[in-house]
Length: 275
Length: 275
Image: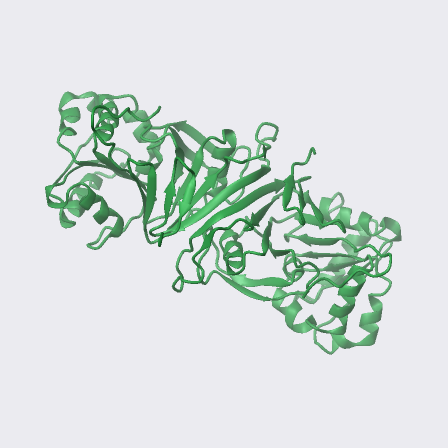
């Protein structure tokens, strides 16, 4: 699904995928930046903890956002598709300046929220200027195509990844998270090998990218991000490989960006922190 | 150190780094190809087990090469620099059609054999047409610059790798081994970040590259290889990064090649198996 179109004079809100395990204490770089972006003491942040099976995930994050100076923060408990179709839950999003999707299992997000009124509203709100952040599973769900699972390891493999449809806040990239911590380059490469139009973005833990309305992202956090650009890929063996084979992929461009680094998604150009 | 110059009408022997843990049974693709290249039942293979502290490593490989049909195979025990300076050990190499350097610790190879008569002779023999293979530590030692150790993980880091001078059979690349099995992309990237003239080559276990006198390598084995080409690198933060920082590296070209894939080291071009 493509991002919801921006209408009238609105400006799209930031889309902020985070690689999981982000620092939650005062001074937490990624979450603090999100709170500030949403308006600081005038921010109203709605937390969607559906990916998590833990009962207190929503409360943990509302406390964190309060501690980081957000005006208000509330959690929206939705564990069934009926919950996600209820008018009061949809309306509860309406006052948000920012929405935060927690970690857990991204297939809970896609199977419980996919196609519901809440997800439809989320897409429209982002097009109207509401910032949407998500960590771990909450990051994976953001693009048109979602990595639902896959094998650990460096190398692309014929059966290395499982894809599913995502929320479609961006269709420029596919996102993986806990990236270097769980050695997920192989599954990201496999995802890109299926259809090289995808830009692969691997996010380390405690590291987020802030994708602005100008389609330029900036890296914030203590880890790094890995960008796989297959725009000049001259060969992939995905179509002919046997089950489990290591793939041949020729001509990938890759960038490794740390805190402050930027990437222009339209131009597919990377910039160091100092530029 | 650059490769020893080829003189007269000689043709350089193959250089064959292998990623470790290669199949040693009959039908073993990598070792069988090495034996065949060295002349099959007319091959005389000399094994250098110095990297290993196990007493039977040399015998294991001579048996393997005999089982794979080599004419003769002998092992050269050298545990001190004196051993490696002895004329009988140097002369023992003279009849070899192929030399095989076993795994173990590459710092044993560099500290015990570095600069000795045996290593000097090895370099000359390769320039005269003798094929030299090495697995694991025996692969790491082959280039001008050797990866002596480093940190596990995907991302390049300021202190991610330790380099040492190697044997200099090739100066086109730096080699890492047990590559995807031990998640060593980060240390290979760090090595390349120091001086991007280096081509980084990461070899999986049971996977070797046969580098011919034409400077074209071919991949043989059950795993894959990872090639990091920094020829178009536009930025590296290595010079300004703090200790342990994730590095920013912009504009790397990467290829993932499986069995049969080829790479032209002079043109820096990759080719799929079928070409």
